[in-house]
View 1 (cartoon, rainbow, N blue to C red):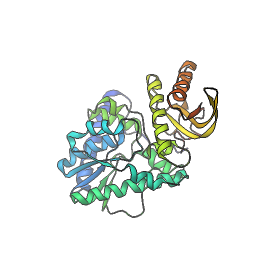
View 2: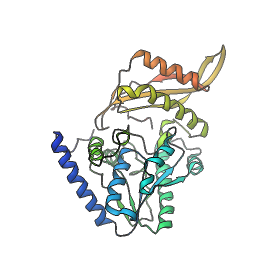
View 3: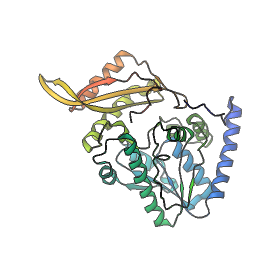
View 4: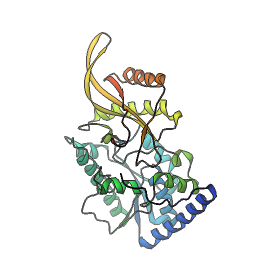
Length: 319
């Protein structure tokens, strides 16, 4: 596993705040130096892209266009919430549900999924950039994204998943040397709401990497509902990440009838920077309730399992 680089934010609250403020000043200066005209920023609503968007907005003002691509791969009610949170900085929401689903049709390999999602995002950003005459893309890429992509562990959609040819003249990544806990410190220094600064990480390819195998509308509907149940039941334990994933199908029994339904895996981990992660020892009654709710509220699910694998050897997400 890659060694952790020296932290930008040193221990001690006053030092953290001071260094976060210095980072903010340096990042704004970098963005102004790199972007000469108008720019697009990919805003997903996660802490990384949100911090990046606020830095870029401070640096560029109306020369920045934040674009939220509604891929159809997001969590339940996510898109409306993000649109509401960022309406004051001119967020543009692009509905691309059918486009992503069509691009992923028949694809089962996880790396290919990530690259398809990454390229589709870029093509949408290019189209939006043409509308405003922008030639620069700003992204919230952080250090673990680079390490996992460059180390061959998995291609993050915003690093290894980027297409080799893009229309943008420049790609600016102000958070590229930060870990997630450092990004959260910057978010607090920027006075972002707690629901953003303390948000659980969410994969760029969204629910597509919480589905083993081909992504279909049916699977997305199932995993989206299951994911919402897991988050609702587990959030009080403050996980680093907690979610549901579809693994495949298996035989079950419902109402004295045999069913051949989906197998949903539940995963809940603790971590500091996502480079390593430990499985959370959730109370048995919580696990039983999660299982009962998922199989009861989603008719096509036959069984629920709990993933006990730490990172390493597993990764946090399934694909």
